[in-house]
Image (cartoon, rainbow, N blue to C red; front, side):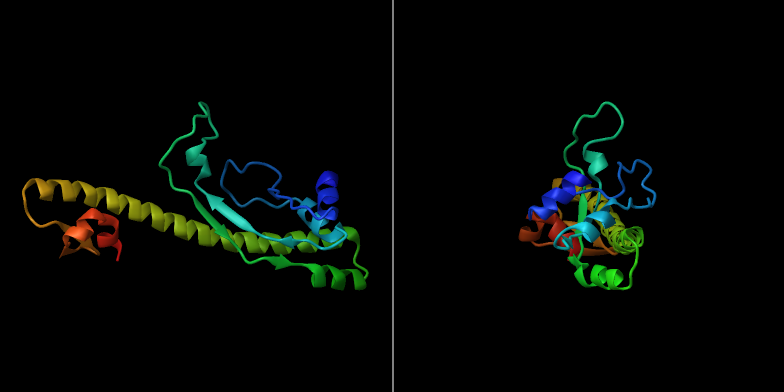
Length: 176
């Protein structure tokens, strides 16, 4: 954390995973107070840009063999920038200890990350369902084209006809 704090004081950007380790269980993890320390003790309070990602473990698995896999879904949700300058200043004027300030900042970032996680999980789940529907309907397209019939795909279980342009872009036909 000392090196990170030095970098922030030099006006550089830093990127950390505030959990302090790789989350192999995908459970909610308590953030380490180091993130709060960086925010509270930097010469100029840095702006925090929170982000949450899902699916990277499907590209580079945590278990051996660690061979990268292509064609996997990854969802990254970036939150609004968080400016803690006023918050930290207010806590300091209330004579809060450095430990209390670090904890307060960390707790707030934890809440924001949990909100981003919920959003990422919802978007990731939707993406997986869309891909599954696309794969199912791609097989349907092949069987219909083989029999020289108009392509019928299901959107909410209701058949619809697709024009030639939509046949070229099946995803557009299914999900519009």
